[in-house]
Length: 260
Image (cartoon, rainbow, N blue to C red; front, side):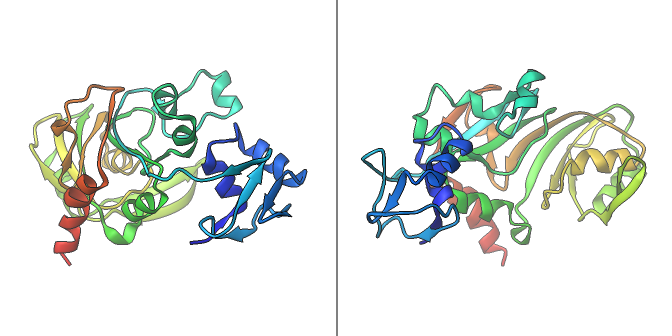
């Protein structure tokens, strides 16, 4: 399989930033099969060609890594930029920095994102194919959340969520997007809490649903993805465990493939 040169170098774990990757390419420090390559988008098969930097052969990690994190409150699901560092933001990636190799740490990707104020089930991996497979909206992967609301949950709100909610996304008071959510499954419904299962991953979807219906989410915690339950792994907020790809396949993909 071919990969772009800048992606290959970023995944190698050798470089401390994307800027360093670009600098090394543009300054002619990267050779492929003995030829200097200055094109960042150059595509090649790393299994068939030899990449050298600083007189050393560069290879990608041989084994993909898979982790299940119980995401804590107040963490974002992206690498920190300079502005976020100034604002003292916290990233889920920093939880892995001292516990994984530099190569793995640099290659980690979250499988989708949970916003800063949402906790719970979050897969983190070096496997880009897995990320695409789970987040691809065509696969309709089901995710279940526990929510608590600021106001009583009404029958009208329940019916609307079950059938689809009209969402209007605004930017500075101007509507920039409108859509109707896919029907959701509700369970364990109480006056101020319930569990909700959705099979699409639009940004802040559950929060927007409740807001559109005149309610607000006070607490949002992801419990599971398909049949893979966070509660089965006995990990506290901020903790994670390494898992086998077979466990993901059995609990997530076997279920959706049997439905087709």
